[in-house]
Image (cartoon, rainbow, N blue to C red; front, side, top):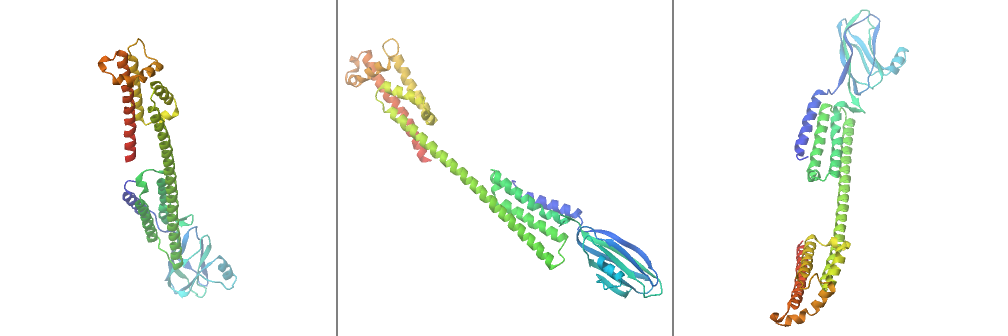
Length: 372
């Protein structure tokens, strides 16, 4: 659907091609040739109309040898009355003429009669007769040639369904619908050009069908568009709710991590950190912050275990005891400190650096979040 213009042009070309092969009318012959009507006699032809629309009896008769002749065309009921010398209503009646053309409107699936009457004359007449029935082939009471007019009525709802279920932006363009409505109008023009209306009532019927079809298509378009908007609104609402829930969960997790970083005791810091890592809140911490916390705290624990002057790692209680004297040790001259006192000072500084590093990662994340 990248080029709706090309789609419409392709369908228009297809319709022109199909219309050129589909005849507007069908026709079959009743009589063609010379017929002799005896003196004081009448000659008749009976025929039945097929299933179809716009039934017409067309043709002519011409007296080629002899004087004038009379002719009538009547249906089954009138024919019975005429045979019984009763009053009959004729569809066509001419008295003593030599040439006449016929163009009579008939009803489908009815029986009719053409009678050439020579009962008033004492001479035989030779009459050239050419008669046929012309009608519009139909399907579902729609002319075959006009079925292409309904192609957009099938294609347009399909477009709307595609528009409803597809996430491609091209399908959401309103210009597509205008192109298909244009296709609808062009199809109507082809249909009317192929089989024009023969009366005002038929014209009004066509207008009614067209207006009703356009209204139905527009209503369908509006309905599907409303459904699509409702669906998108629902999806956006769900996304906003999920984003809000995620924001609240992250905020709670970050607040918990900040409270852990406020711990003054090394053992309390490490204990609360390990407990936090095993909780669901840990997974709501943004990846950058989580990575920084893991690296910094692991580095702190590793340094504490490797740098202590006693064999083996300090226990958390021993490190806390050393940290309690760290502030007093800072006041003394570094040169006067032994290795235990120096370790206390360095450990205290490492703890402060670790906290600041993780807090800096949190502040950077919150700053980027505020810009969004």
